Image (tube, rainbow over all chains, first blue to last red; front, side):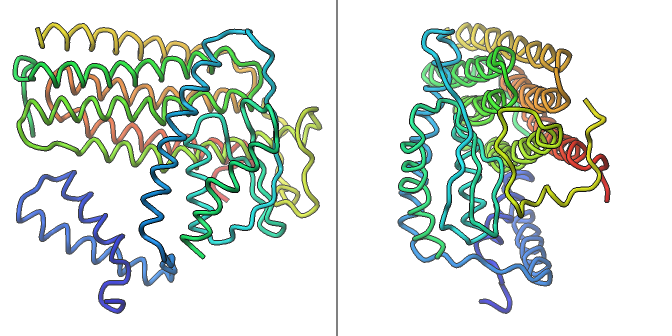
Length: 161
Length: 132
Length: 93
């Protein structure tokens, strides 16, 4: 498994993508599997380490949390943009320490923070483990830090480390 | 290759798909409206994410529903666009945010967090201060 | 009935997306700084991609899907290289 097929999930995703683009026929299936295996072996030659994933159920739960938050923050930001200058809104930067070190986990956190409108990932300092984000509707800094640590970082820590 | 006319689309798919299309286009419009209205760059960086998260997702879901119902077999290649947009938006926004931070810091503009002692951007020698 | 619903929806959707593209162009022309223009260009790319998706639904053909995918990819590369240019003053180091 590890010698012949270094990244099983990546291989499956690549084959599926090929089939979605080229159409589901048996000839394309053979070609898709061959291309996907070749690409995975080429990536293996580059020496990328496969991320260790321990808890698959938690991933499903995490995706659910993130989708719910994306819908919620979409509505929140859209209502702020449409409401005009009803109430004074303050936006600002937050510098927060995070414990997450795994590169795949950090990339996932970046995707989550950017996909939810209202938070934007700006900078990450790997030597101090400090994250600089910009928050659109900054009412209370502690609430945001608490939300990011408890809702996103904790599951990611459990999944990847 | 799929080809259908609008008469092939069942009524329920027309209604549900239209609702998704309208939500997606509306959110994208609100996002770009924010892009025009918000006063500073760091606030404006939040506005297009409306279009790339549920704006794009709504359009993709609507398109998928209408295509699937009209051609009577599952059509979901549009999901590739959704995955692609979701994965690439963080990269572009992160690069833009970092370059904006870098430019504001090198011009000593107010309202920007100071850089740490060992930040990456301190080692930059070719500054882009002359651009504006 | 279903034809009427779809044509009215697509009319509204394409009008909204065109207006969104106009707003992006306005921000791109106004600036005031280079990063604002690049951000507006990125949003313009996304809007163009969504307009092509709606064209696909209007004509009922999948040929627009490939065009939308390519616009998305080109927009990503363009924005990243422009942001890189802002940071370093050159694209290829």
